[in-house]
Length: 68
Image (cartoon, rainbow, N blue to C red; front, side):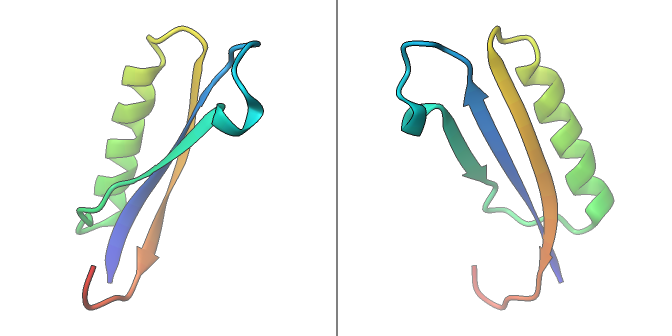
């Protein structure tokens, strides 16, 4: 079982087109455990919280795949 981190970054800016407001980033390197993934997500959230008007959310998911 592999654990992957998926993060969504959204920029709150009035003159930005709605379809360009958010970007999804999937970390290609899997984590060994859910705990490692959650720690990484917390680090991403902390780092991005210092950027004005940038909002992040994310989640960790498990996938049973052979080739990534």
